Image (cartoon, rainbow, N blue to C red):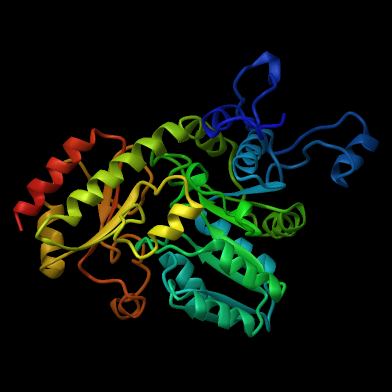
Length: 393
């Protein structure tokens, strides 16, 4: 079914699920099977060779998982999609599937901590050169890309500093040297931003976050061209970071309310960012929806909403961070984001816990920074909660 004329709220519910399923079920069953039996050897062979639709082994494909992949494919306007056991599995499998010794990667300094660790420690072991640029310095990015590279890895907005990259501009530079462009779209979600329509080749999601939406399941997704997804699929098939059908079902179910949740979180995050921006105990607020944000005009151009995550620096350092967070009640001090409940914490225990304090400092991440992921609670209650905690500093 063509969803090009439907709104994203409708697409989130119906994509991949327009037919009835096993025994007439209107919702996708969980296919808890390892293998798939065939009565005819010739048919089995044709399916195994990919000449006919079907399933052979659930490490490779599964009917429940396939519905989830189709849903994100349609929401992100891709040709194909693939799922993984975690968001980091999606990132690492994509990088290792597409790169080889001697290749060069151009990326940004502000990517998620786990991603940074791959760039700083793991890719160099395989003789893959990585150049990390100042995230908002588009000229530096273009210059490094112009030197030649095989892959450009982006993240916008970034985790946890909410910096914004002009995806169209950087993609144009990458195309001049025939580099593949990969962009992590976790913070924005497909409701707020579609990188593939801006020229990006592959979009990645930690579906553990906004897509699942309830902090009860882990999953990674990637989508893009059939050619690239096939290449990644062949790598994942052997490495085994496959998604279980139970988890696929949970993420798929969470995605049905994706637009409702994200729209609420967009509105609340902007109100909270404006409140914090005016508070005397807050040094700086990072949220692309604020006019004061350096990347606001770019975000306004390429996003339809600014997301449910913001970060802010407190006056008073890490002691002020502890004082605030220990005096709030409507927040889980936990290392995730995109949930129906509000989550918060400093990067030293959340997004960049894998890195040393020196590495965080090198990446421009202050010890007085708090990442705040807005839930779907009443925004007035969240603001009162923040105000109470700030008054305790």
